Length: 268
Image (tube, rainbow, N blue to C red):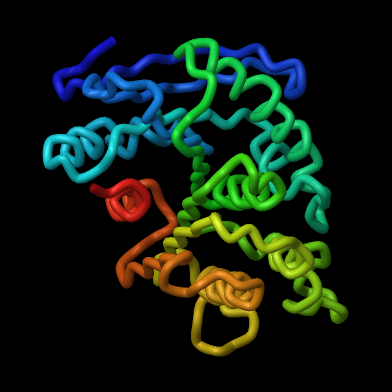
């Protein structure tokens, strides 16, 4: 249906064979997007939060100001097994969480993307991007990093980059060895077309495991950015880091950061 802002919104239910559940998916498309060949696609994890974020209002303001290009937004609702479906597909964390991340990846490529192409009659997109919040951000980065030929950008809001293979309370734990996503980047291949957006809030959390006066979420994010730079990504052209002094680990903060992300990625 169309709301007053001119955004076409629809909800679909996809019966996933891989996830063995019904996946609710919300679609947002500006009515001004008449040329399907020029449409970019943005997949968003934790899509159930978009209503609370007032996402349509955010889009309305950006399109009214002609601030961004038309995009097809696909907000994927998380299920009750969120902590199993999100994560890193090649390795669960020390508690076994993320064990279904590989199945979630298969859902994205083998079920969701074909559904989107069929629904909108699109054989391809101008570009594809993925974004997420917290654990959903880790999932988005994991999927993009492991299938870089499919994507050009990834947006990470308060990403759970602490995801680790050994519990930090264990004597053997080492930041340089046991943070899973950092290890993936370190051992992965440089894809020069990829661009990365990171958002952190100074009030994301209070934990500071190395007692350096910087909360873990910021440390983990900055360390991953350093890994990307060592891999060959330019800290200015390829990476955007938004640190919000009053930012919390919540939907309200991510909603405030969303226009910055969208203008960064698709600004006119």
